[in-house]
Image (cartoon, rainbow, N blue to C red; front, side, top):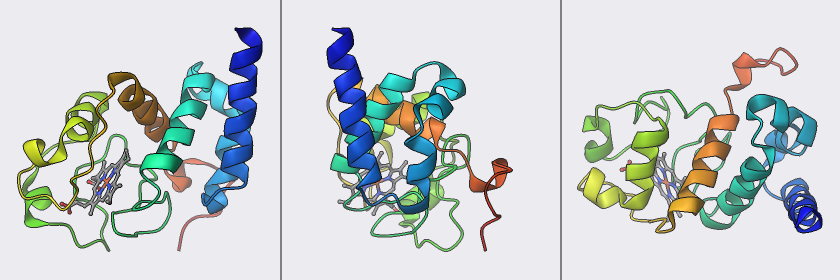
Length: 151
Ligand code: HEC
């Protein structure tokens, strides 16, 4: 069991380091760093892997793609990335992204914000939990003294 967990973490690390996270990979790929964030390092790493598989086709942490960039999402208002063109449905969604609101959103975005441009659902509650933990761990670059400020 311990070995399996360790192997999963290692696989996640390799995937992330070889993946499309760009600058973000250095933060997430350091297990020590992740563990000090929340004590839930393994779940966060699994969330990162799920994020890369399910979300990275449309999202990245630091660049708007089909969907808005995600770094610093946790705790900020929905529809608030300044240079992303949201649907009116998301602009009207007057909420803060927390574990609760993200869980409802990821379960069924079109039910939560009818008319939204995101139709992708995550049906498994455990998968949603790990993805949300990962998003929570990915704080804004300006919060980290070791990172240059974004321009
Ligand atoms: C097929 C493309 C696609 C996929 C896959 C996708 N999204 Fe999205 N996402 C979007 C689009 C487009 C928007 C903007 C929605 C709008 O403006 O109505 C969005 C918006 C969001 C928002 C709101 C962000 C904000 O700034 O308010 C969150 C949170 C989000 N997505 C999370 C996720 C997560 C987590 C996954 C993976 C489980 C995911 N998305 C997968 C396309 C996608």
